[in-house]
Length: 326
Image 1 (cartoon, rainbow, N blue to C red):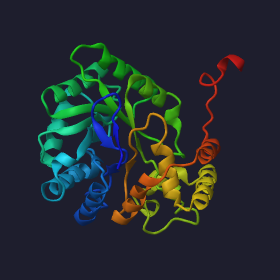
Image 2: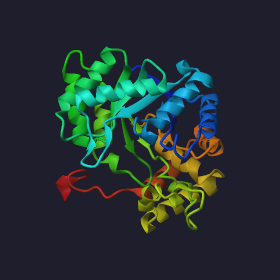
Image 3: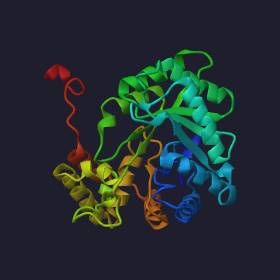
């Protein structure tokens, strides 16, 4: 698999990443092992997790597999911290919480460092410089090799990345992880331009539109799908409207013309967008993951890219496009 630099850093990662959101909850050890082995054998290196996935179960499961299945040195392990299961506070990005969470992640993963450590979301209740200081400490102490953020708006990313670049000894942000697909192009408004300007690599999550872009929901909700799952159905539901249906139809048409699957078309589109380093895939099983990994050989023709751009284009007017002529 082709390797790409993560932002303006020397860290190279596979241009597709493996996500572990369901590991330790919907995905058991055997299926997780099959996925990780399939991913590794295909040349994949970037594996993304978080301390809150399955309440730590995803990290623990990944750590078990690192012991017995895949060499730790072959993988780029990324995890996140800052989300908290508290009824009155969704995020805690205080220095104390973040560093304690990182130490707990390392214990579950069974490693002395992660390759990429990311703040899971912006915390308005903590001064941003305090949050970023935790990243500096993690890198300075060797517990993390690179640092990034996730779910930041454009101004939040610009402020954080600029702060890090402005000070001697601070750790530049390597990455930002955000949802990005043909069904969710909101990052193109401010986040992606900021990331590209500041040398921050984008790691798209949910690159298949929460599974909807595979076209499996065109005729209803399959019983074995996330859309039929009690705890994941609300996650899929926003992308089952008529607007999304028109985009899925266009993806299916393109796939038929290229003799590939809708999954491959949707994934190739987001993988090759300017500023993208590596979409992060969450697969149900190794077979589904294998289909996704086969996109390595696919590059969409420019006319198909343009057609998909047109049919899925978000409405961005003032102040983004041609404001002086409005």
